[in-house]
Structures are given as C-alpha cells and as structure tokens.
Length: 234
Image (cartoon, rainbow, N blue to C red; front, side, top):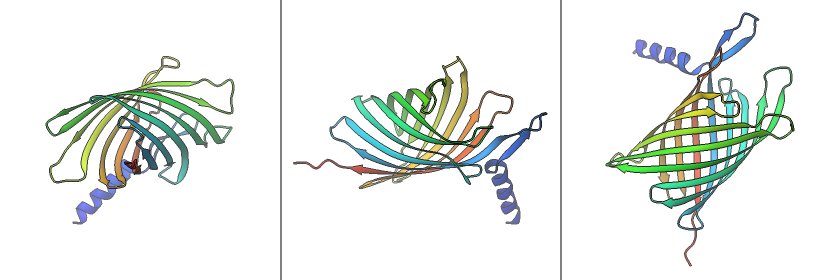
C-alpha cells in the first residue's frame, strides 16, 4: 500500500507540477505546467436545426494559482444535415500577460467558424471538425492578427446502461499568419453526464507545443456546466 501511495505521489509530481528550463542567458522558461479550466454554458434551441450558445470561461495557470485568461463567447450552430454541422462564434478575451518587460491585462477579440462531420459505427460516434480562427489584440492597431486552422478528430463510445460515456479527441493547430505550420497538439479524454436541464462535463487534457527551443507541455483539468433553455410548445 505504501508503494502505491509513493508511486501515485511521484506520478502527480511528474505530470501536474510545473517544470522549468534555464537558458544560457539565465532566463527561466516554463516547460511543464498544470492548468484548470472551468466554464458555464447557456444553450437555446429556437428551431429544430439551430442552437444559440453563450458561455463564460475561466482559466488558471502556474499550477492553477494564477489567472491566465477569462472570456465570454457567443455562437451559433446550424445542422445542415444529419452528418454535418456549421458554426460561427465570437469571443471577447482578457489575458493576463505576466511575461516580459510590459505586463498586465490584455483584451483580445477572436472569431471562428467551424465545419463538422459525424458518423456512427455501432456504439461509436466519430466526429471530424475543421476550424478557422482569427485573433486580434484590441488595444493595438499595428499588431499582427493571429490566424489559425485547427483539425480535430474525436470518438465517443456509448457504454450500455452507463451515463458517463467517454470521448477521446486529438487536435492539431496550424498557424497560417506567417506560415508557421503545425505548432501545437491537444489530446483530451472527457465525459458528459446529461440531465433534464443540461449536462455536466469533465475532462483531462494535455497540450504539447511542437516548436521552439523550449517546447511546453500543459496538463489541464476541466469542468463545464451546460444549461439548456427549452423552447415551450404552444
């Protein structure tokens, strides 16, 4: 039993606690961190194929002790067919910049558009999503707009007589502003419990940077509550 506890503590330190690397200049870089993400989402379905989404999210970094960002997002999701959806969304972001000579809160605006395909095979539901996003800092007029395409593949397995069906996804981030190429991978294991007024989602995630002298790995624990407003039938 003692060995199991020791192994668990070692695993926690290796996976979740921050790690740093030092450059020859004496500057320290974070190469591993643990973050926590939480969100509240409001969903409304005015028609059969259209959904309106409003969400508020908070993200903490530095072993979940420091504010990383918070944002509000408004989006529309439209079902074109049983196997394909399109979506658009806008996001107002406040980021905590605590690196470099100039630090403080930064306000950004991001908009995005999605095209998603889905297909059922037995108890599996497969989804493939392509996203284009455009992000700009509001206070600056000369800053470079960050443009990114994202490719996400996910699989959900329906377990018989079980409410917490698992979903695994992998997502690649491709920077197109300066032809940066693929700069980050994101892997997520999640589950979702549905009830009458919405659902509760939990996930663990790891993000791996693919470029730079000191690529960073971020481990993330997340929780999200989805509240659904149902349209009353006349």
